[in-house]
Length: 467
Image (tube, rainbow, N blue to C red; front, side, top):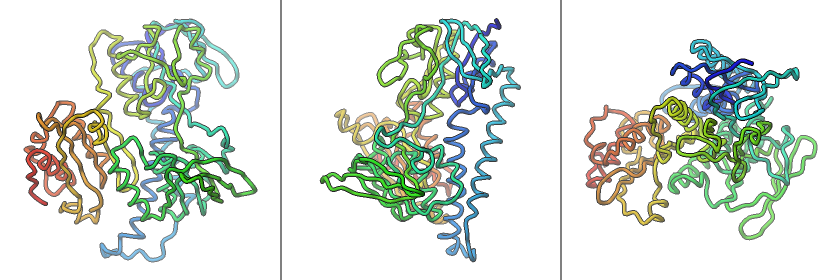
């Protein structure tokens, strides 16, 4: 029986990053992945393919709605949906192949099949043909991720009632789509199809979209998405769905108890994700499972079995690829005697619609609930020279700073390239910067990031220059 220093179960962002970091630290590492390609949900049916479609659809939308003002005549535009899906697939293939290269470069052994524990130091890998091979290790990392949640009263048939996975591989552009859930996944995919001409309706149980984020971001994003023609039904509960032929009828109830009905080509269910531990046989390894199937861990990622770690979606918290990656690095470094640090309060969240939405730290609502006194600095993109030059003046940057110390407590933005801009805010907060610190840092002109500087100046002394 071959033995490793570390076996990682799951080849998604958290898993493959953990495996590579372990190899970098001199460990003999294997990574178990049941699918034929590495990269997990993110690279195969999540982050990467959705961003490919988001970019393609935004190019079409820009050409249709904004090129004329730039003096670019586009003529008769049309969508080749088959080519758009093919390009998305090519991007995914190239990206997942890149992980194979990284494994080879770092001498990580790839074990293809379903991994399950035999005992606390042994895993069994079951290949597609049913053959089984056992391996031992001193340390393990569970990085098996999550799966979309089904609504019990309307299970997905993957044809008319679909998840995000099927929404990324539709064979033809639908005329209509009902999106159940106003969170990140539903809004991103809804915006893709709305840009391409699909009639999109979003049904959300809460009274606002992207509920975990700063309330003002949700309101501003909703106004923007309405311009694409997306219709919203908030404070509305879905009650069922019936498939008949090539149509599905979704029934719902609004906050006043009024019954609603929507006939559509596809109903996209995006109401959350659940931890995926199916077949792991955690009991055999002495790993406890907690509430709703999540694996409890300590600050270092250790499970109830101290030599077995768990990271990413399977332990709960923000279900984000970059969270899983950092947790994986910390777990590997800790098991090798180092003292890594990760601040879970400073994990950025991003919605890749256009305008993009990004956030880190506390929201206004959270600070008020905690009784923390704070100052607010808010700067609109319409006051930015770069934004006006790019015809991208929608949105704002908001900085929340402690009323006494001026330390930045939260940054929330909606506008162009906010997914990239938020990194500056994360870095500033990691080093406990004050709003004045950011206001005194020289930012290149003209750039979108100047809006962060101006918002910080407003939060510090209410002295922005350009508004």
